[in-house]
Structure formats: C-alpha cells, structure tokens
Length: 264
Image (tube, rainbow, N blue to C red; front, side):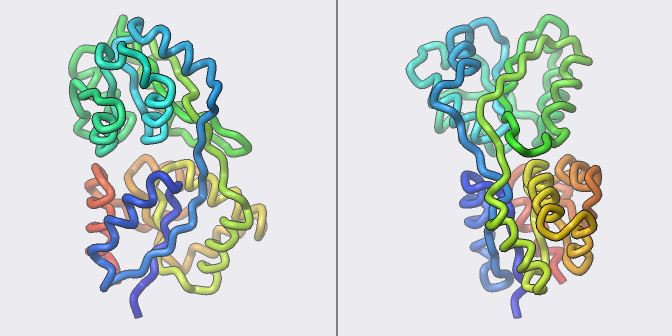
C-alpha cells in the first residue's frame, strides 16, 4: 500500500506542490487539507500609500506569492513598477516576473527572508537603504517568527524598513483542520508536510482546541516534514517534533524529491 502524505499549504501554493508530487504518483498518495487561508482587502490603505510612494524605496520585498498578488492588484496601473526594484523568495521570483513584469536585480542564494537579508548585506545595501517588506497580518492566529526575525535582522543592518500588511493570514475553518487530525489519528497518514510557519501554528492551535493541550502526541506515529530550517524552527518552538528537513529548499521540486528519497 502506498504511503499517504498530508500537505497543509494554502490553496494558492498547494496546486504547485500537488503538481510536483504527480511525478511520484505511483509511489505515494497525497491528501491536501490547508491549515491557512490568505486573502487581501480591496481597500488596503497601506498598500495604496505604498503605490503612491514607490519611488521612495530602494527595494520592495514580497515575502510570499500572496504578497505579489496584492502588489499586482494595487499596483498594476502604476507606471512606477518597472522603475522599482522588487525582491522575492526562491521560485516566487518567477511569479514576480510573470505577475508584475519586473525582473529582480538579484535572487538570494538561500530561499528565505533571511537569505534576502544576507544578500542585501553582501551587496552593501545596509545603512540608508529603504525597504518596504510586504508581509501578512494575522487574524485570530499567533504570528510565526519568520517575518519579525527578518525585520529585526534588517534593522540590525541599519536598513530603514517599513512593514506593509499586504494581505491577511487566518486559520482555515476548524472543521476542515479536524479532518486532518482525524486522518492522522486513524493512521491514514504517514507524513505531514508543513511549508510555512503559519501552517504549523494553525495546525497546533486547532489540534489543541479540538483534542486538548497534549494532543500533539498524535504526531508520534507519523513523520513530520518541514519545507526548510525556518519552518522547522517554528515547529520546534511551539513544541512539535520534526523528523525531516530537506537540505535543499529552493523549490517544491526539491521538497518532493527529498520526501520520496527518504520515505520508508
């Protein structure tokens, strides 16, 4: 019987992840139950203000694909887009070019927010550099450490950074998350895969709400895989075990190849 992998990515990422698994469909089955849903408001004053003053920033950093979507929604009528330097994470740089028609001046070697910070420092963009960081606001969900750590690091480099809440992250409906927990409890899942800290937090919070504070013990019989070291760090920070972390985490192809190679 093929092992079954549970992926918890939000809808706008899961299609790419599921597509990456298709090449291995004879070896594994995949179930998708998103832990997080993302949306952006049609009247976001921060984004409107940003688009009016794009010329004041050296870089606009899109910290997710949803941030790129928000930038496209608010900025598609602005000629300034091609005059602004945009940065993104990993394969999101391809999406940045497709969606906004802009080419990033560089792509960080490490596919993470801190990788962008490292690349800025290596290129001398420190004191006096102005950056707008397009990140999510969190509604009824504890914020993971990823963005705060990134902002803190930029400030340590004396970069003038302004955080822009470009969209909203919130947990999926509890009834949907419960489906994932019940599959795990019924031993229908061999591996659960988290691709972001938000998914980890939403999974943990929902699990505790449904089954109690010690409910993360249900994960003892399955493998927990994380997209990279920062997602893994968030999982460990809130008390979840982590069994698998790919050494390469530039793309979903890296992740799926690693999971197939490491499956029992």
